[in-house]
Length: 437
Ligand code: NAD
Image 1: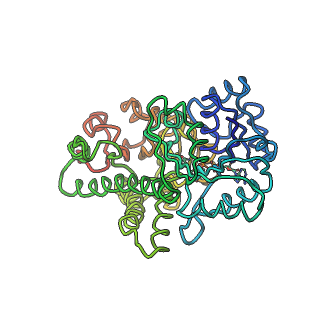
Image 2: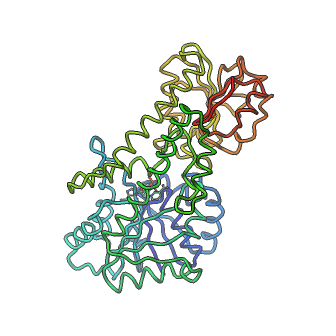
Image 3: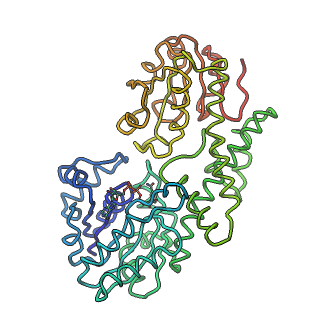
């Protein structure tokens, strides 16, 4: 199959590289000439484990290429995927569909032969139908079908998720669209991956419902964690006991500093907005959004308490600023709430993060950047573990304590046992569990 992938971001690049690895011919298109120029010399605009090797391999095999020229990429394509961003619209939380609709108009003008136009971006209910309307209006001669193919990959584990997904969702209304999508995903169906064919609206809803549910699960355990602290329970024990119930499952039950990232915050807001627009309030999701904001603010107060009530003049080492490990993505990371609160309160903030500096340098003004945890912790009054990178999961606590002015740790990912911290001389706080003085 010949496929054009519009948008060479996290989703477009990973999907393009993986589909080319299936043996399809993929051309990735992006409006950013800088991104495409970089990709054409082997320089990736993002970090994703394994992606560089996969791209190099498939470019060399002649299955994958990059261009800014949409018409050339679409020439002879059986399918055209839209994988552009759908950020929150400023003010009302609605998904901003500007990029999707611009891509639809560009596709319509360049479309010559028959093709399936397939949206991978996360889009509100009704968007795929509108994409179809825009294409038909812009190019009345266009011969095309619409498909909705939401993506469920996670940054940091994206290639494995794409290659071995729990399911593939395809919303389509014509046999031709289903046939083309079946051909594209045949390598997965041969491996017994369920391909779920639905209507367009159901496919669009599945993505938002799944993300809102996962955000709810995280937020639920974060709220339970706050209560655990009050009643003397340990949220790790509670989550373990809950998660072993097959009806609940153990994933997404790790208490922490609140969810962030490029998807959960914007997708929960978009679902809440869709509910409002259809007079069918998403009360649970709206509450999750509010509670998650409160969770992030609670983390700031934890650190303030650990420092004796004030940040002013204190030196704080922050370990990890990306929204999760194994990614350089900083979008809506909890660090964007915590670090400015520290800096604003008069703390001197020293940051270590294996990949966060590239984006973080601009997003977190007023901090200094350090190569590793021990360097960041020099002379510090407290260390804050904010992202559980491997590099921060097995620190030599005695060595860490020895370089600090006063050994204190806010372990916001519950990486270290309270007893091991005490044994190394730390005063500490975690999330949802008791730490001895
Ligand atoms: P991104 O911002 O990393 O990438 C989007 C890319 O599209 C950018 O490179 C941009 O330059 C390009 N672009 C915008 N308009 C264009 C146009 N008209 N023609 C060509 N290129 C254009 O975004 P992302 O994280 O890859 O997300 C894309 C979509 O996938 C979003 O809807 C998101 O919600 C969804 N999604 C993301 C993830 C994730 O983990 N990042 C997971 C599942 C779904």
